[in-house]
Length: 70
Image (tube, rainbow, N blue to C red; front, side, top):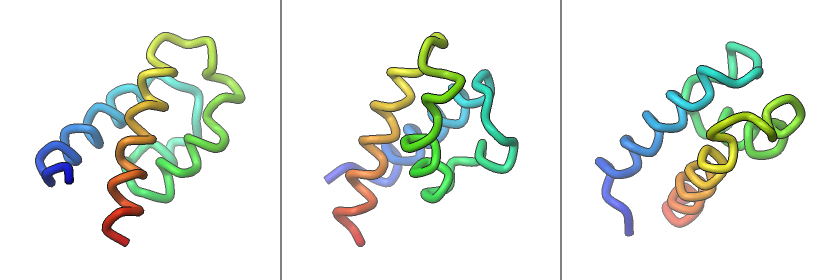
C-alpha cells in the first residue's frame, strides 16, 4: 500500500503536469473526479505534449490506490 505522503506527492506531480495541458481550468485541481476525467478525455489535445504519458502513469497510480481504499 502506498503511503499518504506518496499519494500527495503524485497529486502534486499531476497538478504540475496539467498546468501545461489544454484542459478546462475546473479540471486542473488534483481531485479524483478530475483525474478520472483527464484519464478518459485528456488525450484529445494533449497526447503529443511533453509529459502526457508520465501524467497518465501518475493518474493510474493514484486511481489504483483510490480504488483499493474504496
